Length: 455
Ligand SMILES: *[C@@H]1O[C@H](CO)[C@@H](O)[C@H](O)[C@H]1NC(C)=O
Figure 1: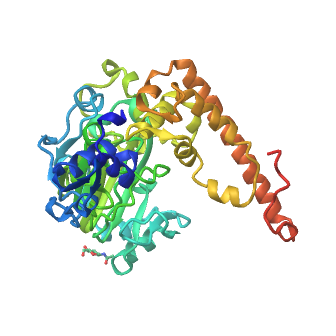
Figure 2: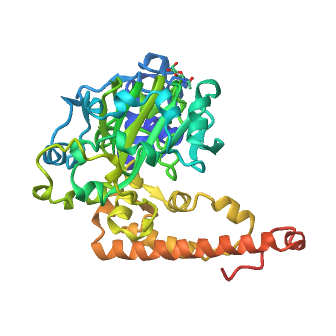
Figure 3: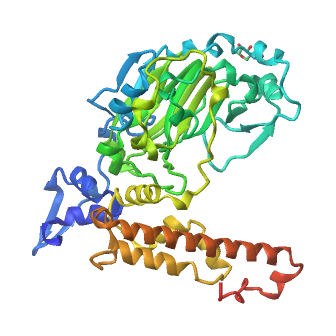
């Protein structure tokens, strides 16, 4: 492959890493005239290393102010049937906007702060999770407080409730018609989250590993969406453990995130009463305006193709409220489901080939701390075994093509090795905890616990 790569492209690779090599090489090398060559040796002028990003639409602007996606997102009035939704949008993973659909729920009219504060059956020990900063920071402090205390104080405090819709107001919401099938609302829903704030919130750029319908009951929200099938390779999700990007959503710096200069964005403005379907793995970023309440319903996308649509009702039931939803935690069996594992790993190598260290960092983000504590390296063996499986041609890199070529049995092995790795890491954690609790233990080992090589 090296024979086809110009020095400029090689330089681009060195600069931006393999992840962006192909596309950035194209941008950076559009004009190859700034190369000065002497005796066959070429050097690249500074203009190549630092393209004039200010020429690119959206540089240093908010996320989404780059190139508008030429393919618009579909919109309908209110809901469509379960069958239409599943076959035309969910299975092909295409987003859809439902204008006015949330107005069908009583909560749309009822949910004023006065109504909440007058609720009589709120349990005293009720606690909701509240975020303390509006610009999402995944390291921020969160706290728990009584729902009524939250309602009474959010305007003045800037607090942001992000938690499951409290039981005592679930009857105010009707399950969206597209989800009115027991195979969905009784078996696949992972969470129903209420987002409640005085507005001005901003999420990070991220993907969800679940399907999602989000409805706005108060205020406005703006969703910036990026099609992962067409542009996923350009968006650097540099925190794969949390599926988000560290890009500053108010000031997108193309010199740090060059792929975003080429990405195409769909910006969807939702008013109170509107809903949107965000297919799993679609890259998105959300801002809210004015006093704001939204509720989203997340469901496990991996079983979508198994839903028997003929067995779902064909008409809308206005009495089917959210109290009928049975929640299933997404954590259970995380490393048990081969389809899910496969999906995660294919996603991991989609941006470009990965070497062993990248793979290790992806699976064990806390590796540096573990090294510092000199814990045993037992957890490396399952990871090495998995890497060896993925690296079919033994060139030290795992690629999307290689991963796609793996037979089912190999994925079964991956699942087993992941479980082994989890088990070893859990043991290490247990041991660290035990030693932490033992008075004076760490003083005896100034370099950390080196006595646990067997782990
Ligand atoms: C908070 O502010 C909104 C809009 O500004 C207002 O409608 C609401 O009643 C206020 N809530 C409280 C508890 O004061």
